[in-house]
Amino acid sequence: MPIIFDSKDAVFFVGGRGAQSDNPYAGGGCTKDFWGDLNSPSKTLADVMDANGGCLSSVYASLGDTACDVITNGSGKVRITKSGEGWFTDCCVGLIVRAGFAATYTSGRYEVTAVDGSGDWIDIDETYSADTTCSAEVGGALPNLRIASDNTDANSTTPHNVYILTNNAQTFASTADKIDIDTGGGDLASNTWKRIIGIDNDGVELADGLFVTIDANNKACDCINVDQVDNIEFRHIYAYNTGGSFSGYNFDKTANHYGFILKECKATDSSYAVTVQSNAVRSFFVVGGTYSASVTSLYMKSLFGGSIQGVNAYSTGSYVFYLGYYGVPVKDCIIRSNGSSAGIYASSVNSPTITNCVFYNVTDCISVSNANMALVEYNNIFVVAAKTSGKAINRTAGGIAYSDYSCLWALDGAPNDSDRWGGDGKPEHTIEEDPDLVDAANGNFRPRKPNVLRGGKPDIAGNTTEMGAVLQEYEFARRAKAANLGRMQIIR
Image (cartoon, rainbow, N blue to C red; front, side):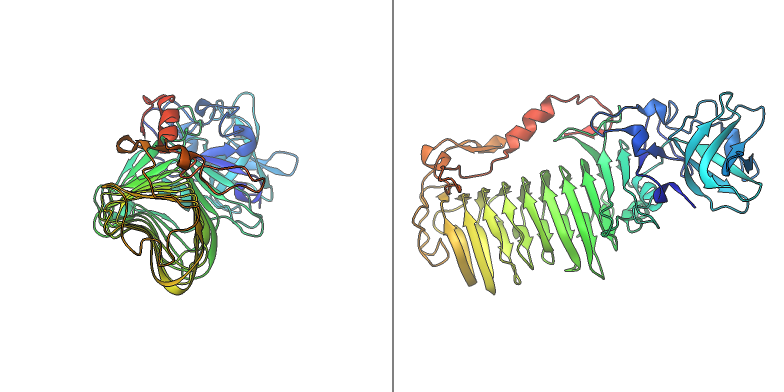
């Protein structure tokens, strides 16, 4: 039975136009072929839903499982009809209908494959076997991310990708509103994904630095919880304001699951911005975005594989990043505190590679504490809070496989802690001088000092490279200012 998830990549919408939909039984979207490219779609939201995010079929077609007749279309497929009523006049091929069948067929979401010119019927991609009746709701948007995720499947019998596009800013009324992504994830063997993406009110994927907000409203729960699924990606989603010791994003598994991406997302105003609670979480990638927390920004003590790149992170707790298990590269990140946090704490058997990062106003920059570790770091700018105690590398156990071509300074002058490089002394090509950051107070961490600008580890061709983060916060901010900030439910 070719329910849409078994037949084609599909796009579903949350919120949508005008007052936005509150109908969990809407068809909810269209095929990916119908919608087109996410950054430049060939259709508009008006092609999928009415002015307030509702379905394009008549409301009368939705009034119970006897509302419409189910017959053959003469070519072996199901036709949903109500003769002479014109209930499907505004519908078109490529939309998704939720059909609630009285008997014979499986209720679910199907592709509309043909539409009567007078609007009396639609054909769907389902093999006909007998007459019956059904309800039918074509197109429209779904009410929230939890409902959209629960009713979509990128790991069906014949897996296909699912794209959930949202412009719906949500504020929790209770802990029951927590967004659990615990069903219908992607399929590893088929490389299908469920991708949850923030869009503007024109249906276009948001630019970097813009987000759709999920406000936990200080409720005692994680904002977004991902559990027991594979291949989940978030883009441009801002999860914040959790109560108690909870997280903006929490990932937890009891069996091995793979493939998780946070791309240009944001999490703030929580004890933890992102947590990984089990070493059964495998292949986790954080790309870009902003994360801040009162305890630890990225708490990945149990993470087993992945990388962190281009992230701007801030914490006032013990650590900004807590990394565990195997080899999590960290690159092009801004890692900040108010003078009370260590930058990266690497535990367990993790041997991280940390390159082209800026550590700013932290107690220590990298803490190494396991006998099985072998740290690699280069091209970093380390600015510690205090010259007498701040360390580039605080090593209590384990080893340093490679450390060089970095810059160390303190907010109050030249660093002088005797053990500031992990016990091995200052590396040969490392410098200890003020990097002369352009405007750290306002997020511009680019160095102006020539020795830092040209002092990085030479590339494979022998060319000099730059210390510090290549992707600067101010670059993200500049792009964000070019976007339309007046769009509803989109914030920087």
